[in-house]
Image (tube, rainbow, N blue to C red; front, side, top):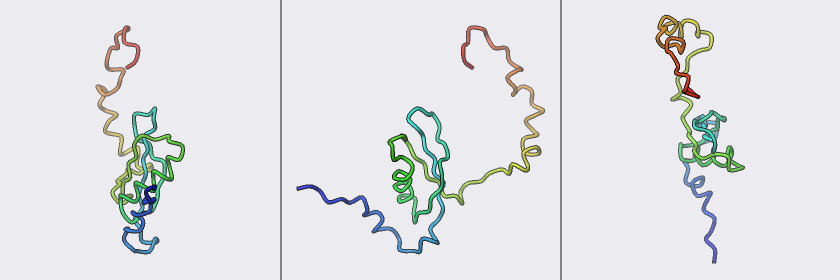
Length: 111
């Protein structure tokens, strides 16, 4: 006899609150060939565990991912594109950080 499908048990055990009050989670996916996680979208869920399951079901339908991160949107802090000049200005006066400051050996194919 086969085991009953328990994939929806997390949904049944989730806190009973209106969906309108569920927190927003940002979803990051690392593809099979990628080395970094890429933002793929957002979703609402009652908690992080259910957000991870929902992100798996929503964003990896074709088995294209190997790792998923879900982050509460409230925990993300970002700079404003309107303030890019003043925000990134301090790096302009540090020429030692620019790749032109270093001599690249000819036998190094990728740097």
